[in-house]
Amino acid sequence: MNRAEKAALQLQAVAVLRTLKTDRTYAELSAETGLPEGDLNRYVNGHVLPGVDRAEAVVGDIGREAMATELRARVSVDDEGYVDNSAVVFDQSFLDRVAPVAATSVGFERPDVVLTAATDGITLGAAMASYFDARLAYAKKSKETAVEEFIEARQRLTSGIELTYYLPAAGLDGGESVLIVDDLIRSGETQALLLDIAAQADAKVVGVFTLIAVGDEGLARARERTDAPVAALTTVD
Image 1 (cartoon, rainbow, N blue to C red):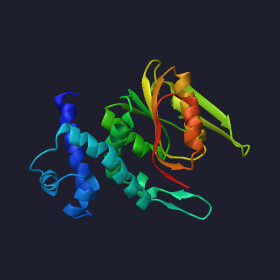
Image 2 (cartoon, rainbow, N blue to C red):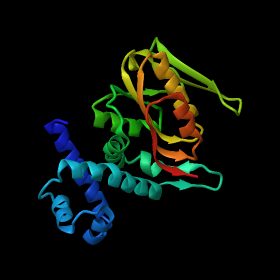
Image 3 (cartoon, rainbow, N blue to C red):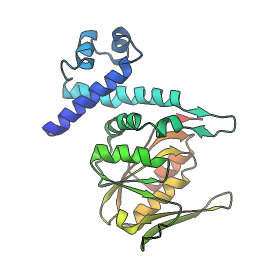
Image 4 (cartoon, one colour):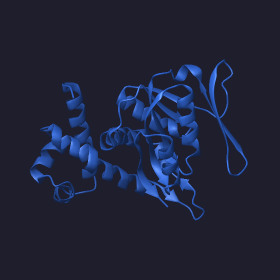
């Protein structure tokens, strides 16, 4: 880790602690993180940065649980199991805080491209791409008229409906590393199509990440398709 990466990590840790501090006393924050109240006060108020090891702990384990708790508070599930996550996907500042936490706690390899599906996955994809300094590519259910070449992935769903995603061929090159992200995973069908697109492009998948997993089916399906890390920030039933 070079000096710039260390500094970025330390600033991300401060951002996580400031987020936690908004509805906690320093005593409560100390009990939750295991860090002394005096140190937390200095970090939150910008007087000093945490050391690298402490910053990794804050952004990784502590930060992941904090972001998952905030995510669960923003999400609602109705009686039929439909998830309303609009309070998440429309909040870019929250997603920007999720990106370093996900990267640090899961340990994704830095990708060349972050690949997602239009439309709800785009804001998370943008946050992850910005964090990794990677390109963002997103597949759509329709072809863009001005584009001549596409990578196409198609699958017939259990309902009998055929789902097709198209990615402009210029969006992903052979040999590039790709991180697949989406806002939600349920059956894993969308993620399977994105994995198909990556395979057709001869790209190397370095991970699959989603904010919300509805049950375990989708995560299990993705893990059957790749040896790379597969993770969700939180799971709902």
